[in-house]
Image (cartoon, each protein chain N blue to C red):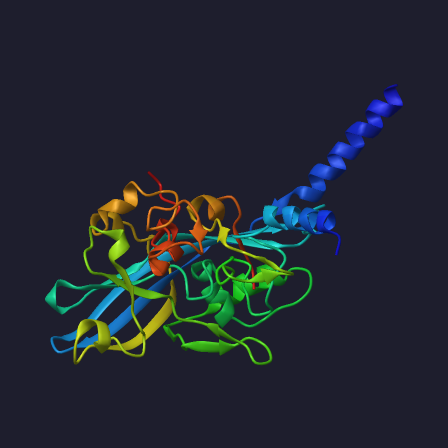
Length: 64
Length: 239
C-alpha cells in the first residue's frame, strides 16, 4: 500500500482507538479497548491508548 | 428567502428529532463476593446502578444504539491478616463489565425495542444469581463473567496492586482462603459509596492509570498498574 495512504488510514484509526473503538484488530477484542496493546495494523503496532476515566466518561458503554 | 428559512427550520427539527434519545428505567444490582477463610466466611458487596440511553432509530450516528453507564464502586472483602480483596467494576477483558453483566445474564432480544425489553427482563430477575467464570461468546470464544480480582501490598500505594486468581486465592492470601462464589441480585438499595475511605488515593487520581502514566502504554514496567485506572474502582463520583 502507498505509504501516504497507509499513514492516512492510521491517522483516522488513531482517532477512534482505545475506549469505544469501532474497529477491532482481533475478533476476540472488546470495544472497551483492553487487550489492544501490541496488536498490529499492517506493519504498525499499537503501543499506546487512552482507556482511563476521562476516555470512558466521554463515551459510555454499549449494550451487548 | 422565507422558504429557505422555513426549510432550514424544518431540517433542524428533523435532525433534533432523529438525535433524541429515550431512557429505559434504571436498575440497580448488588454484586456480592463470598470468600471462605480459616476464620469463617467473609463477604463484601456493593450496589451498582446502570442507566441506559437508546438513540432514536432516526439518529444520524449509530441509530438505535443503547449506551449504558454504571455508577457505583468495587466490592471490598476484608480478609484475615488485614488484607483486602477487591472485585473491580471491570473484568479481564471488559472495562465496561459493571454495566453489562446483568444484560449478559438476561435473555437476548433483537430488533426495535430490544434494549428496553432486555432491561424489563433484568428488572424481573429475582434472587441471587451465581456468576459463572466464563460464558460462551461465539465459536471458540468465551467471555469473562467474573469481575477482575485484585489486592494491594500497601493500600496507600496504587502501584502495589496485584492480580488475584479467582481459582487460587490461597496463592495470594494463604492456605485455607478460597473464593466460594460471586453473585448478583437486582435490588432497590442505594448505590454504595465510601471506597475512598479505604483507598485514599482515589480522590486525587481522577485521570490516568494507577502507575501515574496518562495512557495505557506498551512501555510501562508495571503492566497491571498501567492497565488499571481509578474508574475500575469507582464510577461517576458525585463529589
